[in-house]
Length: 150
Image (cartoon, rainbow, N blue to C red):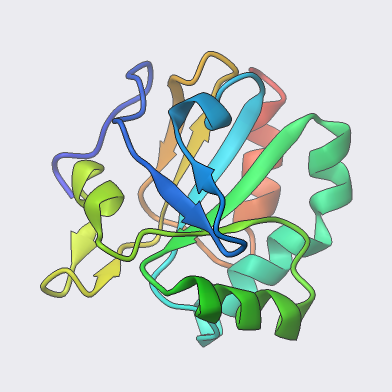
């Protein structure tokens, strides 16, 4: 993952689809602090732990004025099932063609999945912090602490 964008850089142009079919682009990710976390696959042990950790802290994220989006290469249908099964309270975005993951330098396994990497975005849309190594259990807490300094 040597080509990861770094702190202070703008997020590369990307167009993602929410599980409801709506499009989410760079303008939608600007305006407030935003967590854009990429994960390998819906409904797998580590990805479920990470998603549930964000779910459980969503009240704190809301109080801090932080939007949270989970992103994987899974289909919108897979995302809907994952959200419903675990009562996730934030949007999951699909990058089915892997273009966003590729632009961010996190595509792996011959384009099959994205690495588990998180981007904390400042309100101006620039990258405030990159998390290339994530612990699914504690990551949501770590980002909340880091975002307080933005």
